[in-house]
Image (cartoon, rainbow, N blue to C red; front, side, top):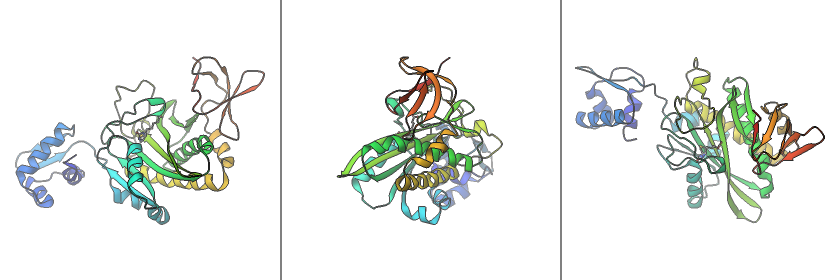
Length: 322
Ligand code: BTN
């Protein structure tokens, strides 16, 4: 988005003259006009007031690296390498590329304003329109085996749910293994991808989080979805604040998981289980029963009336029987 700096100046919703904008950005008034046209082509509503200047009518929520860093505790701020991009194929893919190039020792965190090839679980696409949602990935390194990943994916769900609750969002639900739900609709999804083994016993993982914040239209999404602004319109949602809160919560949860394992997370996950007590059916229809929460390793348990049957993350997907 070439007009990003210009939109930053217009973001206050006030009238700005072409002259003052040109002076602030160190470019000509003709260049300002071209950028205004380009921004309008990208969907921003900008009013031209004859003799006075320009006013942005679209509410802006621009990503800002400094604002995200300011929202983090000092220790987290120095522990991460924060990359904020205008556009990328996938923030998960970007983490993989950056990690190949640099070994700063800090946790790489990538956030983008839009993704051209956002990916979801089970090979699905993740709709990633510009300027509306949060697309965030973290590169995490663990000492251990691949087996820890099932637990990790549930831990991440708990961390995102807790970050939302700290932001004042009530009744956040978790749909096994790690979808974040609000009032029966999906608000956020998490994609955990294995990057590989750095050396014997050192596993590199990319954790990608997509959260709907301002989105009002998602033509290609085939399931009920929610957004923060749609569910809680009285609040002015700021992606930088939500991002900082998610990063802080995820990194704290990962530290806890590494130190103490999954134990404490079981109850924190289960308290938010949207499947509990519901009649469920597994994706291929071969298993039906009542949702019974998770076991100590994060497997989902279904009661078929006689026994509890275990469902492992990644093997099968669950839905409520209609
Ligand atoms: C799901 O299918 O529920 C998981 C969706 C994960 C989407 C996020 S957006 C940021 C990161 N980059 C991607 O390409 N995917 C994840």
